[in-house]
Length: 420
Image (cartoon, rainbow, N blue to C red; front, side, top):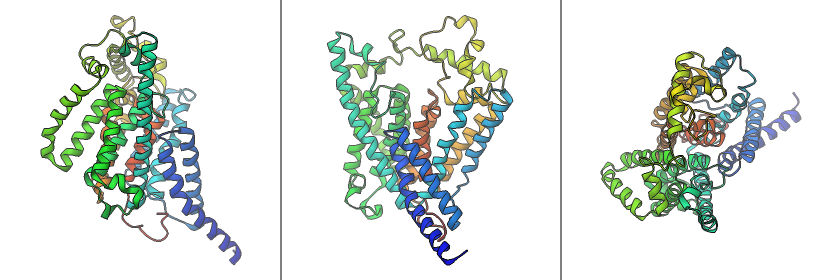
């Protein structure tokens, strides 16, 4: 290789290495407003890292937790082949690309300074989405009044979506953002942040708490009950890790929040035990749970195949539960049942391994903001998954992986050949 060629390769490798953090971080932020932009940036970040790897032999960071991700993807392929439903499972194969977000962020944004910057930018984008949801809420109120309809009945199937296309996606992302902002509020300070003036909203406790308030109010107005439970779990964890004595204040704040909430929110809370008929009944979730258990009993090892529970749903519904209540039956509304029914009990075991390993790995993180934000993201996803197939949503999966990857950031690069 000539000296000129070596110089050219070095220039390209340097450019790729410098671009990778911006592209990877941009992908993590963009998912909060556009999946198309996020995936374009993710692809560009992958390309930049590949150039740096091939040309300059830069190392990729592969935390041990990566093996759980590989195992989940590998077993998905095995289950698909075993079920003989290759065409039906194609959407899950395409989703493998999203899982690259973990490796890309862990590699390109794998220092504490970069990981914090990514989380700040994600929180800023999430806050803007929350603010836009306030406008949407006001518009829904005006629309219901103009149509002379009861607001609760009108709003329940038309909830706020922020920058997203569906309220479940919006709330699933925003509960992770809430965990990020609270982690900054409770543990960050200007001396350790390494940021400039732009970092002030996150390094000043009161400013960060104000941002957390915006996210919390947006989640309340969104009225997705499963995410309320996930948000409560996140807040309890973060407060317990910070100052356990403040846990005593949480029930008081919850009661005050309920009293101060609009009537529609109070009505939504009461609907947990007193549903309004088919408007907000959970009866269809009871049916999906029963059918999911029957699917697992019939196919415990490999499942029905990815995407198949919705297609074969009626085969596993007990006759005494027919006709089906009003609801969506394309999936099982539970990430644990869904994976076990699709891909067998080994897939469920791998998912639990993934969650557990993420928490244990993040607990070794020296930076408290990154450590607690990552654990909060796992808690939000794990609890939310009890009532929704949240990891089947590419946007929620993308956010979860990006924040989890930040939990494995290091203070300094491992060596000079590392991309970070």
